[in-house]
Amino acid sequence: HVQLVESGGGSVEAGGSLRLSCAASGFSPSEEYCMAWFRQAPGKEREGVAAISRGGGTVDYADSVKGRFTISQDNAKTTLFLQMNNLKPEDTAIYYCAANWGTYCGLSRYAYDTWGQGTQVTVS
Image (cartoon, rainbow, N blue to C red; front, top):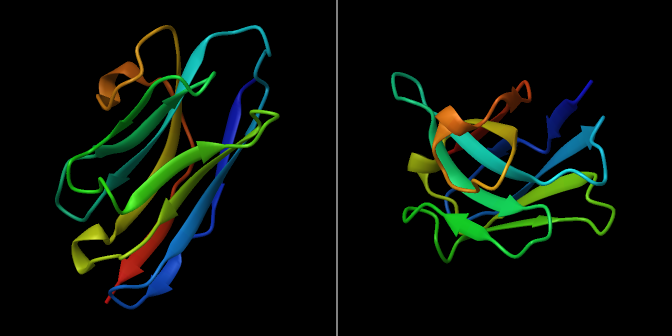
């Protein structure tokens, strides 16, 4: 049973930084998968922020966060990170960690079938 648990959200002033973590459990080390961060602001659709393949060879970012956010994972592939720098008020949202099994590693939420519970990020 795969589980994803996010942490690291909080409130920060514009220009500040936060680092989100997503602890993953229940994965088989032999499976091919992609992990990603999504976010959803009040009244808006859930949008992809960044994605990374299991081996790290594929990385994708939304245009709105390129140059400011960095997705990464630990060597054991059990924790996913999102380093967010130069945060802006428009980055305020609930951030979700997600996973999908297969070769797709993009930012379409419809491709992801396992989700964490989300963590709130507020930028003022």
